[in-house]
Length: 403
Ligand code: PMP
Image (cartoon, rainbow, N blue to C red; front, side, top):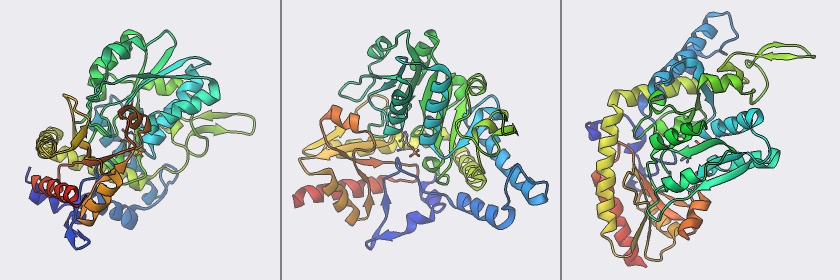
């Protein structure tokens, strides 16, 4: 990949902040958008805009076609068996809430258990806690070691006859740990337990294939894979989606409505109440085509190089503490330096044009595990360069001197 050339596809990377070239290292929060995605959104509004699924007229049919083609693109991208297994949502968070609400309504009673890990994002904790409030479901948490790796033996010990679902992140947004999801899914299925994979941090870095993985559910957000905000994906095996009740009621998710009784549409539409973000879904499809064009393996190899280089540069600094030293790791570097507050580091880096994230990264239990209030997190995308990592390292050295 010619990174310098590719960077021209992302106009925002050319801008300056505080008179300095922007160094964007907050990709785990959201990624920048290539020109083709923004042009696709423009094209949709300028030439195709019309509500989908409902209209007999030309524009509505074309918009519907574009939206349903986007579903096919997602299906292909994640290797799903059928496009009816692709539900469009607002993002990872909504996808998990959908499964938590519908799956638990269908299959969980008081004291049934949901197993997660200690490195989950709040979006894979709180939806299950809501189910704990509503129907007495219990949350079980598999522990990690100090390198930020899941303890697989302990994980297996947490499985009980009451475990109804296992919901784990593929890659930690704080530690970069790549979880052994093949093993997790194998173990879960030996116990006849379905698995949800939070792929918010993995589809864009290492890719996924849901049929090879044999996961039961998989979720991700468009905005983290170079697509527009406000769109997400829930993949669910047909047998589960068919067995689950609708999440929300409204238009499109019905077959017939009367005041006495309503029957529901087939999947995936049963889970897509109201006008979908058909502009967003086509934008997402364009982003997935872009990523597929680069090749996820090329992206993974380049980002691994970047991570290794950044780890080498930062870990040699005096007083540096890196959080997340898993053997198998991707694109995220969380750290604290000396006893400088992460917020101070983030604010000073910002003034030097470098965008990183500071705080608990929506993973407060994980911060508690490490006994810190927060970290500084640099997260990489394929458009980042070694030069930018040098700028980061030099800036941190300057900040340490200031303190
Ligand atoms: N899970 C993980 C692992 C994440 O990194 C994020 C976003 N930081 C989410 C879930 C939530 O994603 P969204 O806010 O797009 O719904």
